[in-house]
Length: 103
Image 1 (cartoon, rainbow, N blue to C red):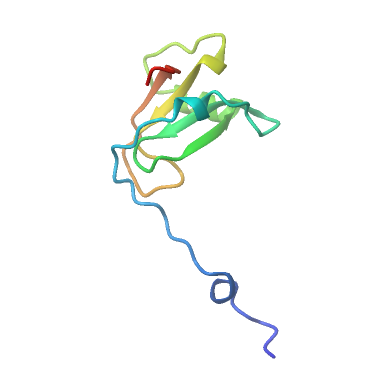
Image 2 (cartoon, rainbow, N blue to C red):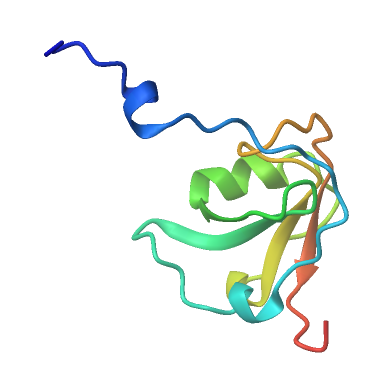
């Protein structure tokens, strides 16, 4: 048996998600407690539909180029992006959105 089995052949390969756009945030999911010990808020990608947790450094990077002020309580808001690290989109548009349970 070959000890150098290609992991991709064994486990399968995944590609980068297509940023097709049009995804809507799941506000219920965005209110759930963060799981990561260093996570401080969520971001949602309208390009691929992924919800990601952001650390303080991620928050600083995402908020650097926007004209919105971050609120004191980050659990009431999330970043909405047009693309993210999980998809192939190149549109880096970012906004801060209030969690609205009425959708």
